[in-house]
Length: 136
Image 1: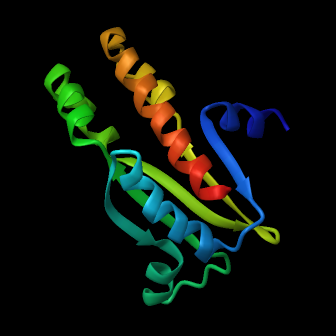
Image 2: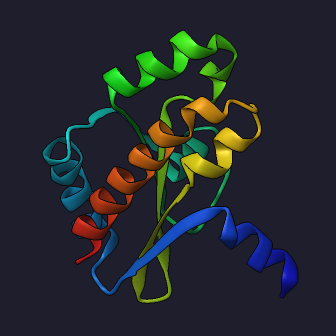
């Protein structure tokens, strides 16, 4: 439907036939290989379960960042800080796994800082490479 298409235009989405655990492990090694740091992994399903909320689908969110790029962005405009770090979501999709993130170029458009376009594109390309390496 149109709404899903509009959402997916704002995201980078990649699918893998591999099980989620395998994709998550590949992602953990792919992140530093591409010069990014892994700040945290949120196990959303486990967190919900700990609060007594059943969510029957595994979802993990990887917070990733490149400190050099983050510094450039924050020096330009500290108000962009809530958009950091970048989040990569991993969840089970049918028999396989789906990985997605909000495209930094799209996210940055909200802030009206055209000077940051090249940084956003570079971050987006690197994040694509991180994900594409992990889903292979």
